[in-house]
Each structure stands twice: as C-alpha cells, then as structure tokens.
Image 1 (cartoon, rainbow, N blue to C red):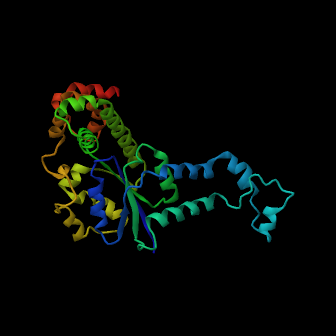
Image 2: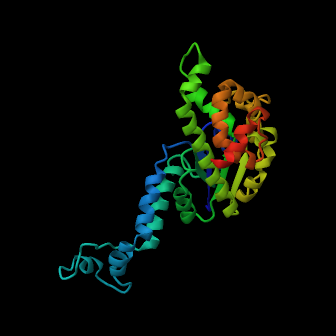
Image 3: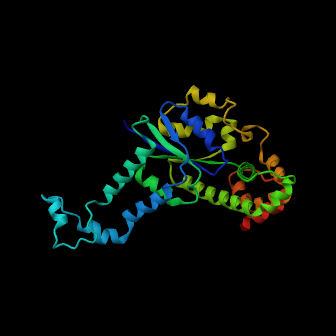
Length: 297
C-alpha cells in the first residue's frame, strides 16, 4: 500500500487538536498526538550522519566495494584502520530513519493507514525538523495552523498559567515575563511555518478561524492526499465534546485581549502584532501604538 505522511503543526492553543480530530475522522487517516518534540534530537542525529564531513571522509569512503565477497572479513581485517569502520552509506541512513518513524507513527500492531503522521506544537521554531521530514518523505504533506496572536497568548496564559488569584489583572502583570516568552514563540514559530508553506507546494498554511467558519477550506489538503471529505469529518464540527471557547463565534481577538488587561495586551501586541497583521488579522484599535511599534520587534 502506497502511503502519504501528513504532519500537522502549529503553536499550542491554536486549534491543532480540533483539526487533528477532523482529519482522524476519515477512515484512511491516522494522525498521532504530541510526543514532547523528540524529533528535534532525531533530526540532529540524522543530519550528523548524512552531512558531517567526517562521515564522508572516514566512514563512507571506506565502505566495502559492491563486488566484495567476504564482507565480514573485509571489515574485520586487522590490517585496515578500523576507527571509523561502518558498513552503511547515506542511502541506508534514510532507510534507518524511515523504518523508525513508521514503526512509531504507522505501526503494524495498530493497523497501517494510507495517510499517517502526527500533530505537534513543538517544531515550528526549528526548521531542521521540517527539513528532516521532507528529506525522508518528499511526498509528505505539511499542514500548519495559525490562530490570532493575542488570542493564543491569552489562551496559553489561561490554560497553562492561570492558578488562583483574587486579582487576576495584577497577576497578569506579574506574569509579563511568561507572556513575552509565549508571544515571542508564537511570532517565531509562525514566521518559520509560513516561510515553509511558501517554499514547498505540498505545504499549507491555514488560519484556524477560517477553518471554524468553513471547514471546506481544508479541501486543498484533502485533494493532495487524494481523499474526499467524509460525513464523519463534518460531524466533528457539530460535536460539543472536546473543544473550548475558541470554537465559539464570539471568541475573536478583540474580546480575548481585554481579559488580559491593557498593559499585558499592549506588551503582547509588541511581539505578535506584525505577524498577525501579515496573516490578515485586523489589529485592535486600542492597541494601535503597540501595533506600530511591533514593526521593530
């Protein structure tokens, strides 16, 4: 069975889980969930084997010739310098890593799928992971999801850093270092993902808000996968389980930033304003000074 990898990427609290559920409701698709970003280390090791000059100078250059009849004898010959003795070549490295990834994300014991992959919120800032996946699977489809920047910052603060406080507005001011880290990460990740989508014709950049308004916006992705949108997928859009307030029509960024308070929202806009505007999100009028200053960040 010919298979196609599909990699769903985006920042935390950007709607990737809803889109994962939508895609997984197709019988031919299986996208696994987050895995703590372990592919960053795997990508680093892959490129060390494939591209490091020492591997080519000392290891690959001394692999046994194709007509060698006694491979074990060749490699065990005590007359040879054995410090970098290895039997494999760069093409074998690709096979090693494909076998590992497919054993994890398209396993026999669960059942192989025509379209397989994962969703992860930790890879956007490291283009080496994207390059790693594209090198192994030129036919892979990448789907990156963006959600308005202020909305994401507020949602991450509420979900991951809320706690209890009698004075939530004051707490948000005390959390400014966390807020800035979230906002910087949102801007950096979506900058990379957008650039990646513009670089490869099998990479897509989708606004979450547009998907909520009209799920058929995902049709170009399904077309590249050679699949039709199934009724079971459309049913996900009407389910009440497994989705939060970001799915509601009144959850636009102008309502969200007010929950943080003006000062935290102003600071967040310094980091997310430029990219948010680039992606077509109107900026709140009350934060227009920060939106202008965001061009410097």
